[in-house]
Image (cartoon, rainbow, N blue to C red):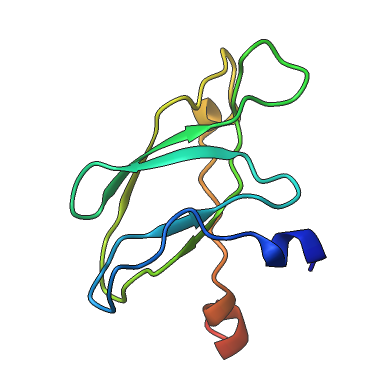
Length: 107
């Protein structure tokens, strides 16, 4: 892990152990989340940084989420995921990686 990243202070600190607000991070190589806004109990609007060398297109996303709860459904509205022709129009689905599942052999 890069030394710069480990020294960064999080944008959000939990107020208590009962605080169930998700903690987003994308200040790492290729991370492109610009902003996350909590709009409901388990719903967030996400705004992405534009893809490099484009005229304001976004077609991918890469960020980390912490403070999730087991058996809880979250809804992410990626507000500016736009490009005239996208692989999502052809049936592409999001990829989710869980470090915990990978370590336990479940993922």
